[in-house]
Image 1 (spheres, each protein chain N blue to C red):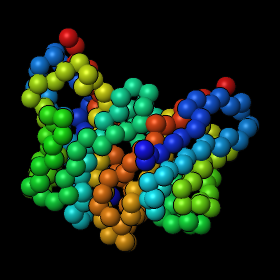
Image 2: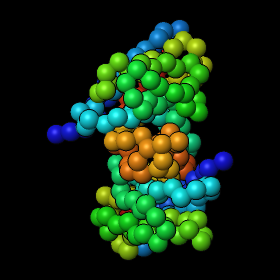
Image 3: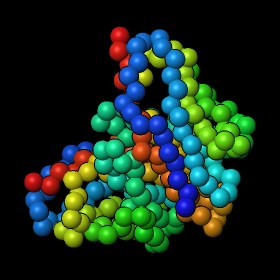
Length: 114
Length: 115
């Protein structure tokens, strides 16, 4: 079945450590996105990529980094510069960046900083 | 800038009650509108969508109509079930190559349905 796979589902990190969240899609979608979800705040865009080897900052990119070396993969690194990284992270993809269609979401990764 | 505003929750209903979750938006163009649902501990699933004014999206008994004159996309269901308990997000997205294609979300509305 086609879909988006995020891993790990749960992750614990000590302060000062970098962590990488994986996102893989087999939908053959061009565009991929990372959102952060905090209670009562909806979803906020961290980074997005419309094509391989290219990506743009979203609304809250500080303290995060991404890469897009393959069409199907868009990993997110939460760096030690991110002051409040505890959150639920959602990866999404869409068929065309300019299309009006929906985004497809993964199951999410919950990061907790100890 | 563009934004989406939803009614605050939680919304608590008894089973078989009528549901309305209000959603209004601010946009300079002609976006597509979406309702997503999130069950506990999971990602978001598309519930329904509408791509132009007066379109009605529907799925699993839920409906929403794209009202350009009132810039609204209210979610309704005639008879809710306990299994509908979840967080509901209203969102908009612009077509066009000059845009990012990103979704702009409301803050989410928690629905609790009691037996």
